Image (cartoon, rainbow, N blue to C red; front, side):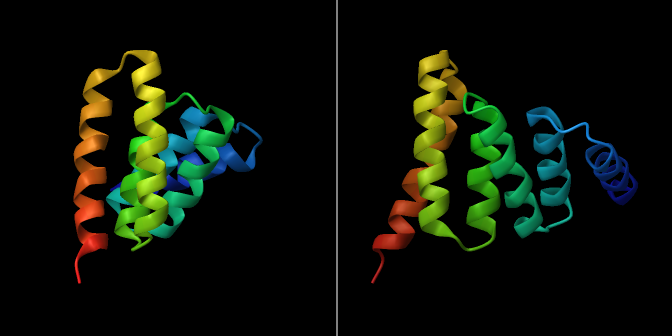
Length: 110
């Protein structure tokens, strides 16, 4: 029943309630629906609204990776690692480092 959640969040957005948390929530809900393109669109906006939102960087990396945009995903993870380390969010930084290494291995495969 995630679609009603998306509709509710989209309605909030349409009513001018834009925020990084709203965009993060929309991005996560679209990811749950396996709609990586819409997820990435909202998550990109989340990090524009709040560049220090490490969870949004991590979700953006996942959305871009799912969409097959490996270079962009790698950039998002690297940016997210930098943000997480500055904030002292060690767990998020570690997770994104693992995801980034996985992509780097994929990209370097012949």
